[in-house]
Image (cartoon, rainbow, N blue to C red; front, top):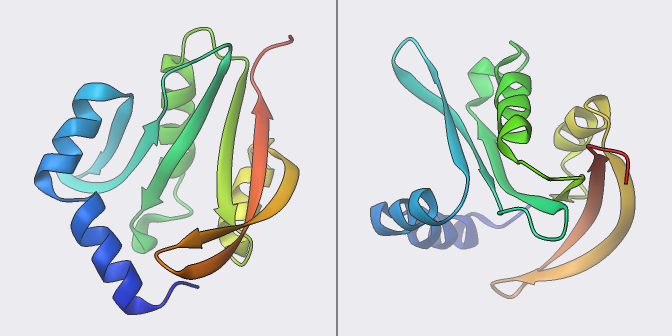
Length: 133
């Protein structure tokens, strides 16, 4: 979906040790481990006006489908005190991701285009209602 050179540049910048430490210290960030090995993570925004956003959610491909992603998502949601909704933006072509979020109760709000380092991405914004408003 994203050309490899753009992915590599993004990963080098966004997931450097310093950037990860900033995320750990500034917002809800949870990891999943299996047999002592890091296999995934979820990065949320702080709750603001009853809303939080799931900025990033990744699992190693070989552990997908084992319930670890569901447990990680549920743990993060439980930690978002006062959140009424959770928003996520997913690349439109990420059918596996969209299917996962649909299965967890997320609904599509809208579709939009986003420019990512000069590359246009088609995205889907989804919402999960956590509490009655």
